[in-house]
Every structure is written in structure tokens, then in C-alpha cells.
Image 1 (cartoon, protein in one colour):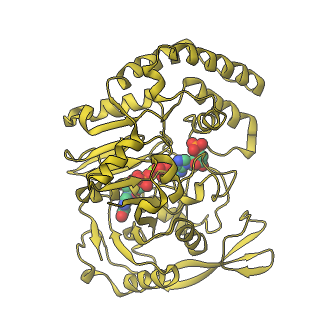
Image 2 (cartoon, rainbow, N blue to C red; image 1 turned 45 degrees about the horizontal axis):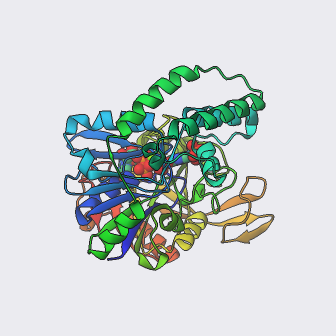
Length: 423
Ligand code: GDP
Ligand code: IMO
Ligand code: MG
């Protein structure tokens, strides 16, 4: 059985959590392959809203297994909080949630290093979620990291101390004001580690290999979005992992020829949280409306998300680098009420019109070129079939499908599980 992927195609927060939850009905295993608690994946059903950070979004389905893959970075403290939030739902977590031994641990000093690095950058800061993501992946590639499997070894606390001490001297190097009580942070950390140790650790690449061989259906869940990819995103304003399809291979140990469908998910407009270029960003009442109607506040940090029109140049690029086979369009309901909807179809880059994503999309190099389309006034949130769609929404969808050359298979018209329309 091939492994299907679900990936965000923009700057994150496309609605991955919602759709993974909806799709879990069709899968035996949901496996997160990268990122960590910088992610905030929202699910809504039965009138309750859940935000998951590290735990895969299939967790509420009692028959699905959820795997935290080797490519993920885990903060035991945040993980414990997520588990605490799940307690009321009486899920059999020790059976349905499995953790890769090769996943790396975020230490309290990784979080401090993130804060010190951002503070030292001043105006050039990335706008990181400050969850220690960058420093943890740096230790991974620098071959200094501590992994979940180390917790089963007798010398892990020595390893921990040596790394934390090194981090402290690095924090001092940054020469920024940072107030912290490491003893206090470590108390929480070691308590949370004990909780983590009660869960089931697995050799996840072997587990997934056997599952696949035995015909189990696997969906890989991405975090962040393609434009935050460490290689293909708007570097340096990116996260520290490969958020694109290739990241699912390295983050789970899935061979490239075992990938089946690649589901690409995007909002009907664009949002971005944190710093970095955003060619279609709006600073007017239209952007304000999107933010207000779309309730665009970060699920992890609560920061307001920057809003703008759909950027087809960037979206095409994401479809291309991921090999997307089916698209899902989210939050079309938020655009109800606009007389005109704009879509960026080209950039003027250094004075010339181009339709591919160039090396640098900072405002001094790039201006967005728009096509205009008729908007729709109808409320979409109560609709449950494509027959009910207004003509101008159908025209918008048809235009995007033609430009992107990939079918839009799901249109989401609200945050709830049930507000999901298949085409
Ligand atoms: P993720 O990180 O990709 O899982 O997305 P987030 O959860 O960070 O952000 C998506 C937000 O949009 C959440 O608050 C969802 O509840 C909400 N949402 C998802 N789909 C829709 C939709 O179709 N319409 C509306 N109005 N909200 C949606
Ligand atoms: P989900 O999975 C939106 C952004 C941060 C910052 C940059 C680097 O919910 O879509 P980091 O903490 O990784 O060092 O931050 O990436 N960022 C996200 N933006 N959604 C996310 O995840 C994000 N995870 C990181 O805002 O600009
Ligand atoms: Mg999110």
C-alpha cells in the first residue's frame, strides 16, 4: 500500500489539522513527519475546538494509530500539556500514540537559545514561535542532539547535562538580556520526560515498513507549509525542516517510490505569521476583513496573521516541488461578501513580468500582478453539496484548477468536520 501525504502549500495554517481529522476515516495510521510544537493544528467537531502541536491530528479516531515520526522534534513539556488536554476524552493513548525513538528532544536550553538568537537579530528576527525548533534541528544536523531512544539508555542524563551546559555558554555568547531560572525549567522538563517515558517508543521506519507491507493505509501529516521549507521557502524567514514532500521520506523513512497521493492544502486567500516577504499582503480594509472573518490568529502563539490575496505564482511553485496530485481549498466562506476577488497571477521582478517564483521576493524586487474575478455574496457555511455553490465560486475554482493543472477535490466552508464538501 502506498503512503499518502497531506501538506500545506502556503505559509502554514492552511487547515491541515481539520482535513487530516476528516481523512482519518480512510486510514489506519496517521504519521507526523517534521516540525514540532511550532505547529498548531486545529480540529473542530461536536462543538469543541482542539489544538494539537506535536500529536498527529488522527488522535480522536479510536481505531487509528498515530505515529510521531523521526523527523519531528518533541518538547516533553508541551507534549505533556497536550496529553493532559486529551485526558478528558478517554483515549487509549499508550496503544494509539507511538513515538519514534529517532525523534529529537527539545531541551529547555534550546528554547532559551531560540529566544537569545531572535533577540540578537533585532529587526531582522525570523518571528520564530520561540519553541526551540531552530536550535534543536541545528543540534540534530550538528550531531549533538538527544533523541527519544536515548531516554532508554543509562547515560542519557549525563548527555543531557553536557549539552545543556554547552547551551548555557552559547546563550552567554549572544550577549542579550535573558532572564531565566534553568533549575525551574529543568524541573518541569524532567517531570515531563517521565510522562513521555510511559508512552510506547518504536523503531518507526520498521513499524511503518511492516504496516505498509501488511496493507495498512498510511497518511503522512505535514506541519507548516511549503513556503516555510528550509530549502524551498522564503529563506531565512522559514522553519528549520523540510516541509515539502521529500520531508515525508526522511521524516518517516518512506522510500520515494512508495508515495501515493500528495494532497496539497491551501486557503482561498493567503496568510502568514511571523516576519518575511509576502507579495500579496494587504494593509487595507480587505486584509482586515479577511483577518476578522477568518479569525486569523496563530493557533500556537496567538499572534495576528498577516492576510492577503491568493498568490498563484507561489502556489504553483508549491504544487510543483511537492508533486501535488489533488488540491483542497479551505476557508472559501471567508471570502463571501467581497464584490471583487483578486488573484496574483504574475510578479514584476526587477522590472520584468515573470510567472515563476524567483530567488528573492522582498518588496524591493517583486510587485504582484493581479487578475480580478467576481466575488460571491452567499454564505457558504451551511452548504453541503457543490450544487449549492454560487456561479462565481465555481468560476474561481475552475480558474485555479486551470492555472494549477490539478483538481480541487475538497472545498472547506467552515472550521467544523462537517463543513467539508467533496468534489
Ligand atoms: P493548520 O495549522 O494547517 O492545521 O491550520 P490552523 O489550525 O493553524 O489554522 C486554520 C484555522 O482555520 C483554524 O482555526 C481552523 O479551525 C479554521 N478553519 C479550517 N478550515 C476552515 C474553513 O474552511 N473555514 C473557516 N472559516 N475556518 C476554517
Ligand atoms: P502549522 O503546522 C504558521 C513560522 C513562524 C516563523 C517561522 C519560523 O500550524 O501550519 P519556528 O518556530 O519554526 O522557528 O518559526 O515559521 N511558523 C509557522 N507559521 N504555521 C505554522 O505551523 C508555523 N510553524 C512555524 O511564525 O515565521
Ligand atoms: Mg497552524
